[in-house]
Structures are given as structure tokens and as C-alpha cells.
Length: 177
Image (cartoon, rainbow, N blue to C red; front, side, top):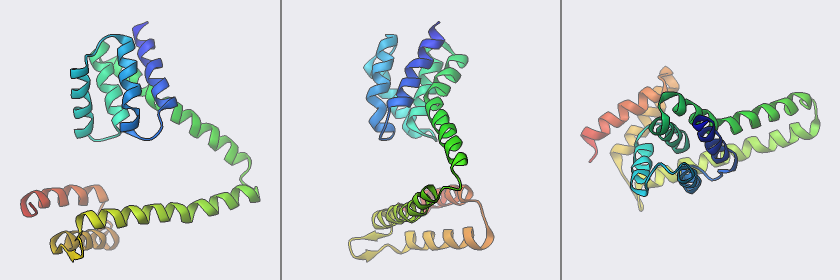
């Protein structure tokens, strides 16, 4: 019975949690308080651990709480609970998209979304470049070289981006301080 309660708590978090990991932390904390199991101090540790481990904060937090609460199976149930609403939503959208794939309206919407998505990615690139490559109006040469070499290696030699990210992190730890 406890395992189902943790599933439903995190299902609610996945269903109603909008705005990313930090925005849903209050929902996670409220759910944990329903269990009556974790103090505010331990929750702050959970947030710290969720930040330093790879992956979304909600999934990391769900896994941590589930494991702390009842062990491995509870961790699996909590993690599945937080991702289940997204899986269900994607399946529903896929059903309707495949049903209306010849619709001119839907194709028009998708054609409008593509350039907007590229624009959002471009704005993220500009923001990250401003923060790491440019300081005010001056160019930081070493990060700019990292950026150009990464783009070249990924594009020309098809080196996997994760491999390049890890290599750049290791090099940055020793070179850029």
C-alpha cells in the first residue's frame, strides 16, 4: 500500500508540475510531507543530490525519495509515477497526430513550430555564448577555441556530443580556471 501511495504522489507531481525542476520542488516537498518521512534538512540534501546527478531533478528526486522510503521497488514506482503523465500525454498526442497527419491545419502548425524551435535553440546558444565566450565586449579566446573545435569535431568526424562534452569538461578543469 505504501508503494502505491508514493506512486500517486509522484504521479501528481508529474501531472501538475510545470516549469521545470526548481518549479516543482514545492510539489515534491508537499508530497513528501504527506508521507511524513523526510525532514526539511533531508529534503535540502535531496535537492543538492538531485542537482549534481545527471538527469532531470524530478526524476532524481523521485528515485531518491522512493529508495529512501521503501527501497528499490519503491524507487522504481516513484520514478515511473513522475514520468507516467508525460508518457500518457505523448501517446495521446501521437494518436491524434497520426490520425490527422494529412491535415493541412496540423501541417501548418508544425511548419510554424519548427522555425520557432530553431529560434529558441538559437537564443539559448546566444545566451550561453554571452556567458562563456564573451565577457562584456571582449572575447575569451580559450572558450571560443573549445567551442569551434567542438563544432568541427562533431560536424566533420561525427564524434558523439557526450564524448566531446566529457572531454571538454576534463580539459576545462585543467586549463580554464
